[in-house]
Image (tube, rainbow, N blue to C red; front, side, top):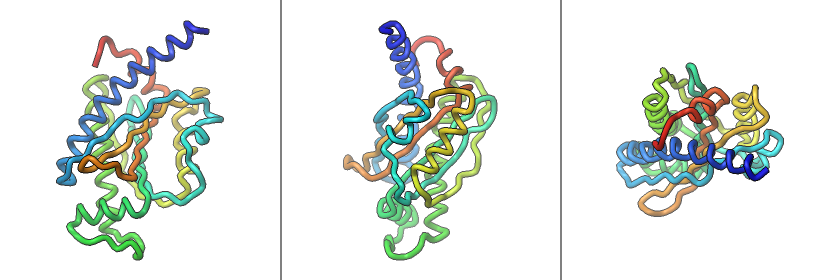
Amino acid sequence: MAHTNTNRNDELDILRRVFVAGTVESSEVMSRWTGQKIELTVDRIQRLALESAVKEMQLDDRITTMVVLTFEGPIGATFVLMFDDRSGKCLAANLARTEPDFDAPWSELEKSALMETGNIMACAYVNVMTDMLIQNIRLSEPFFVRDYGAGVFQQAVLEQAADADHVVICETGFRCADKPVAWRSLLIPDKRCEKALLKLPGKH
């Protein structure tokens, strides 16, 4: 059993190096995009059993604002950027150089700003993984959704783990101008992506 746990820890260390590289690049592009110092941190990388994944990620049935993209090509993944409404409105207003209106419905301009934010972040991960794996990875169009966070996550998990009994999840947190903000992102590689990353030689 110890040998198995050691192997699993080694594998998670490999995945962590890859995801940290993508997170560093994502921090840089987010800082340029927002005009503020944005720092992304890899909060945890986990390999979870399907039946416990939603519970372990502490997602509930509250409505959550999200931008979702998928990686397409020889390997796949799902990227989900999550906000509470107030934080999302603040980010959109900052990008549009306007004042946030917390009482109004989401405008097309606000949605577009958040979708482009998700697209920019996901592109950073794609660029890193493309360079490492020498694979042609494409991104889907981003889509904006306000739905139950647990439901969207569960759908992503089931799609990515269709041929496995577990799912790998990289979760990142955010700091803006050295203060934590209520943004969260999840990167969920599919089995093909996980296998390809684990074959990478040496340190990244």
